[in-house]
Length: 204
Image (cartoon, rainbow, N blue to C red):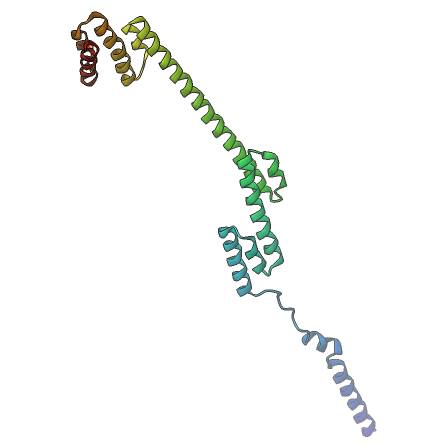
């Protein structure tokens, strides 16, 4: 009877050990190697360096040194976008900006083209204004000289232009009246002396 009881206890212990034994699956899981990243931190730093240098030097060939596929593509797209932007602004063609794939660069391109158009329009208006002013000045000088009318010179806003206008009228008057004292009307000493010299030259 004691022998039977001993065998029973032994079987229970064996069964218990069998249940606690780890399965093959648990062993496989504990030894499964973890995946390693495709690029290291050092690679990322170098990729960033080549990206910055490519843009700084405007050299797309340097993009080929970038191993990260996303950054490599981004590098080339940025340089292409910048090239299109320059061409679009030079040609004042906002339609060329539509060829830019990066939205922010595309929007910036159109803004730059619009800004350049406005700038050129302002310069054109300023030049037109200067030409009109020059024509008006020339007209006043000619009319004042022909009519021998000093009052017309007062229509000129620039002091130097007024002095020239006064000189042209007065020097002709001094010659016409054969009187150098007429030159005394000129306040500008340089023009006053020139008027007298001109008068003397006309008498010789």
